[in-house]
Image 1 (cartoon, rainbow, N blue to C red):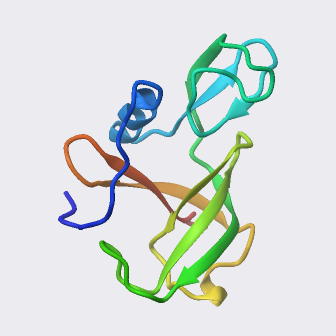
Image 2: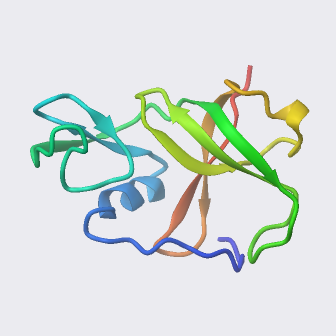
Length: 136
């Protein structure tokens, strides 16, 4: 478990399935059963058609680096430099996260780099889905 002072999310009834998934080493997404839209972040209705007929499924975990910024200033729970990134999941949705397991430099973080999840247990309730370069 991390002893970090990093600010942590507060699970809600709408996000409970997502946080239970990260504790199990999975990224769980939602899919609209009416229009097939896959989306993130979790919510009780489809952002595409507003249907409440949605299902939860296990994502592949594969992602590509869509965008990032390398932050060089200290912040609670973070040691600079660190990448604040947007990754595009194989299923389509994008999510904000951090990139770990590689130097935090532009040379080590090419856009479209293939990524896989790295789950970091913060406490008994929260396991964060971070991403690292996929092994070739």
